Length: 127
Picture 1: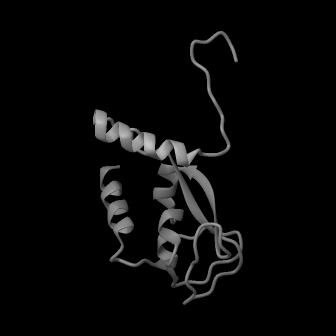
Picture 2: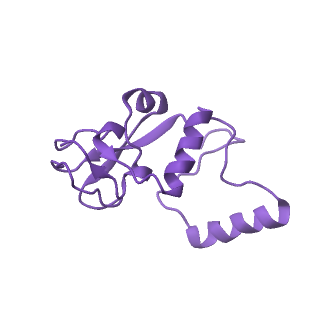
Picture 3: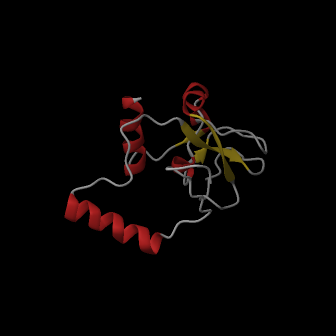
């Protein structure tokens, strides 16, 4: 653990049944933000094809059968237009993508009406 006074606690899981109510209580009672940062993102999890994906095919969800996520520096993801996993569910392929190849914004048609896509575009304007 080292001499302290700061240590890192690694938990390979979240205790959401405890953490969520505590975060809500802190927000309401103390007007405290618990999971926000003032810093721009430095890393991004992007979508990679689990198998060959074909034009017209819709992507399923995280943990499904069509894509998995890998992490990369945020600036690289922006430069290469890599599709964030948070936007992948429901996206429709407009190009074929081979197994284990990154999926880019150019490879998919996104649902323009979703809140998550609109929020992501707002976030990207800040970067």
